[in-house]
Image 1 (tube, rainbow, N blue to C red):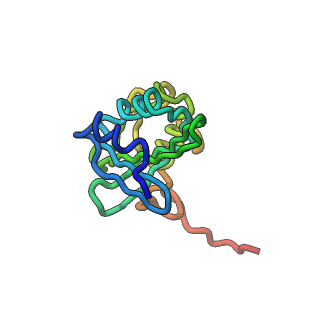
Image 2: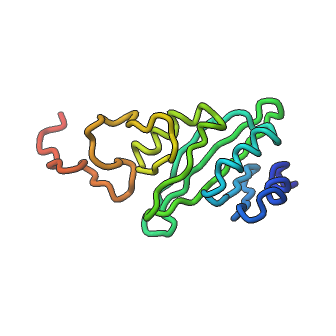
Length: 160
C-alpha cells in the first residue's frame, strides 16, 4: 500500500506538528499537536482539497496522559478521498482551538463534543450546550461520569 497523498505534504509543511501517522485497513490517521490544529486543517482544506468535515468527536482514554483525543474525519469531494486527523488534549487543559473558521460544519459538532465530553473549543462562535439541558452538570460521555447521572439515586422501580 502506498502512502496517503496528504502525508508527505503535511510532514513537509508541519514537520514539528505531525506526531504520528498510522495506516490501517486502507485508512490513514495523522496525529498532530493541538496547538496547530487550525493551521493544519486550513492547509488540508485549501492546499489538498479536504473541503468537507464529515465528523468531529473525541475519545476518552481515562487514566492516560493525554486523556482525550479530538478526532476529525475529513473528505475531499473532488478526489473522493478520506483522511482522519487526531489531536491529543490533556485533562489538565481540556481546550483546543475551534475549526469553525475552516469548516462551518464544525459548529454543532464541536458543541456536541463540549457538551458530552467537556472539551472546550476556544473561540467557538456559540459555545452553548446542544444536547443536554442548559443546567446539566458535568459531561455524560466521560468515562468517570456517574452511570446514574449527577446526584441521582439508582432506579428502584420495576422495568415491566
